[in-house]
Image (tube, rainbow, N blue to C red; front, side, top):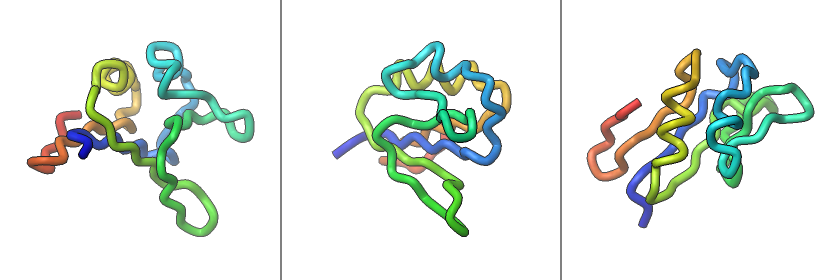
Length: 87
């Protein structure tokens, strides 16, 4: 079982590309709308639009860097054992 969950609040993304620059294994820029996408994530949709992406994993190193550099704080890291949001 994964220890961490990453949540990406996609509608708030400003398409700056910082996450994809520091963590290209996990983040890409969508050719459709220019916003970032979390590779391999589960998409949560409302009214046909992705409102959140979620991915569970054990290692946060690359994604912590992506979250730290996000200028609009739309990447959140959550400890699955405690439910605590560290970013």
